[in-house]
Image (cartoon, rainbow, N blue to C red; front, top):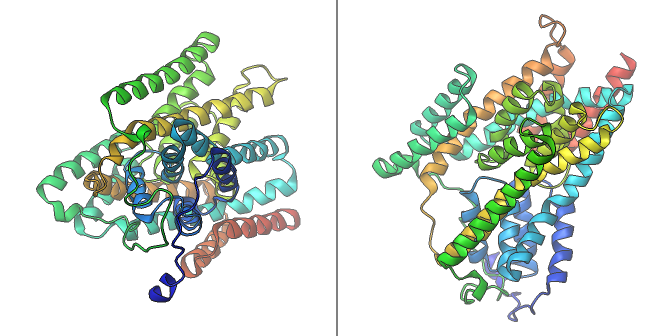
Amino acid sequence: MDVNHNTHINTQAPRSISITQAMLYWLKLGFISFGGPAGQIAIMHHDLVENKRWISEKRFLHALNYCMVLPGPEAQQLATYIGWLMHRTWGGIIAGTLFFLPSFFILVILAWVYMAYGAVPAVAGALYGIKPAVVAIVLFAAYRIGVRTLKNTTMWTIATLAFLAIFALKLPFPLIVLAAGLIGYLGGHLYPTHFKIGGGHGATQHTYGPALIDDDTPTPSHAFFTWRKVWKITLIGLGIWLSAMLLLISNYGWQGAFTQMGWFFTKVALLTFGGAYAVLPYVYQGAVEHYQWLSPTQMIDALALGETTPGPLIMVVTFVGFVGGWVSQVFGADALLSSALIAATVVTFFTFLPSFIFILLGGPFIETTHGNLKFTAPLSAITAAVVGVILNLALFFAYHVFWSPDNSATLDWFSVALTAMAAFVIFRYKANVIAVILACGFLGMLWRLFY
């Protein structure tokens, strides 16, 4: 098959791409980037490596390897990296922003419908049916990451300890990530074979013809590494973050809802190792338990709606921010929508700002090293810990879905059955997550309307 495929390789390199052409593609990608990071990366590989040939597979995978070791949404960071490599700083900012902007507007609209009309029987019934699907989806996420990560006794031990740390000891998520990373760092030096877990992204490489940014294409001038650039990007990045925080503090005070959202979601952005599922327990600890911006049920609904929209799953924080702003009533009871819109914007801004800084800061260094990155041991340990953390999240969701909040002794058998059905089709047939959510929502609506 490979030989036959290679006989049709285009031998001419594509023409240079203008920033306007690139912008149109990134906007389109923002609307079609379903399927989580794996699906989003697959779409970009198909479009940019195979079809458009904007970048060679080797350079694509090299950039991806860097994005995988960063906190934050790796697919969005990969788009930022490629946009920056092609069209300098503004190319990266445009690519990274358009990757999640459509999702932002879609989630804001869904959150408004949820808060304004969530009590309508049909809407409430649909949300009732969606929650069991979320339990099954989170369980499958733990399974999927576990299969890829838990390859030996060491990894299983780390996952188990992480689960016990958050489930039994109630330790904060940042501490678990820090401990796992430290174990990985030390273990990678002392027992490297125990921490050698492959990511699976770069196992196979093909040739699709000459690319605009090919294997041997010289590094563009803006991508050269200099310490001057490092300090410049660092100061600009910190300056933007500090200016935004000072603006919030001067207008709303340190204890104001918007200010606390900016501070909290900055920490969220720096802790998103291993995907959005990993950091959701931390978001729950802060947004639900500490700040009480939303209820446990609303947190489950946030994840459900985040699963049905394009863009990175971490966009659930936009929903969290919207609900938090609505509940906080910063501008009074007559301006709930304004408060919610600003809160959603604040949360999204502070969640994604570090991702742009990481790419613009580290990109030039990564372009000087076209070998394998040597950060895999800490990442492997963190990812193993994430499996335990996600399992705890699934149990947390299951408890709030299966038992009535008014009577913990009453088991909701319909929700249990719906979760079992959703888990069966997801695990057995790898059913599309969006289709499962919509089907469960429809069944939940029928149950609530006619039962």
